[in-house]
Length: 549
Image (cartoon, rainbow, N blue to C red; front, side, top):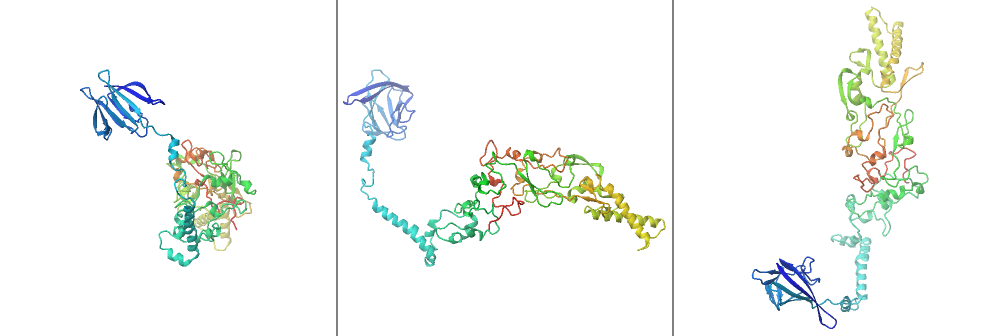
């Protein structure tokens, strides 16, 4: 253990020393400006760990440099003994070993002999201006302005206007015109990266819309042609931002207009939007309006006006889930789930249409059997007239077969044949009464009795199933396979085909936030679900946006 009396020496204004003492101890005593050093010398001219003092078994003390030699008594040493009178300069400090009255105690005085001059003195010696350094401001400025004007203004203009100069400079790795290039073009525009006039039709003028539309002819407009709404293509699509920088998807692009839609276009039917997570209106579903109405309608999913679908079908989701007895053979059972009927398309975006032949017939084929059954023959699944023709033919064959067994004859064109036709038609109309009920067509279709004079005694409401509830939205079922169908579509207790199982916006907000992630949710900016350039057929009138002229 080293015991050391550290004497700090300061000088008053007359140069007389002022001594202050304190004792330190340790197995080793490190010297430096680091806070952990026992002999702390706070000056940037001293290394963090400058030297270290160690004691020997014979009672002597030694000083050694940290990683380098150290000056002791005018010479440089790796290790030196500390005896009374030994002087060790360390940066601006001077350490002197003094005699000790206590055997085994080391006495060291420390004095700052080269203090740092005041900041004012340093600044006074340093030139603070070009003039103080003997340099002129005007001459370099004139030369620099001339060089900038030559290389970055005159030569680019000459290259743009002179074909001969443009051809002569074409082989250069960097042409004067490229000095005006603010950045690389997007990947799709790299093919004409050297032909600036493809987009920039006139010097020092913005890129016109017709320059964009000369290539992008099929791109639909975003909004109506109102002057308050229409923007130039280049206001949103700014090139020279890198391979994928041309397409914007940030929140301000949409919110700048949609937070106050009617202030820009008083005829708009759209609601204001200030963000998905806080101020987004309920989804508006696009529904087919039902029989005789071809134009789709938009219905909000708000609680007050929850929409229903008039598809012309009678269907219960609850009756088609779990382990079920087959109607075609009560001895057999089948376990059904959503994927038996709802199958995604090749793009994993939407679902293929549900068809009678592909999905329903396997379990419900007994509904098409004749009564009594006729081997190899079933009623067609089609128009009412086709069903009546099949019934009349069935009963006509049956009547003729019965007459043949009794030995009778129905001559072609004679009264007996006409009677057979009339009888077959009467039996067919009678059979329709049962067929149109809930055990026949009425099991799945909305049916209605027709006028007695009608050739077909009943009619079936035309099927108008909505295929795309949100046709203008971008949604991928493939990205949502992490959950179950029932997590979003509540159909387990649905007994009506009028029920709509499209989840509302509150369901989506359980997993999705706005532009910024929040609380473990997925960041979902506007472009996650909305296209900017709407396809013309995506929305029904009057919501359909008009193309610009």
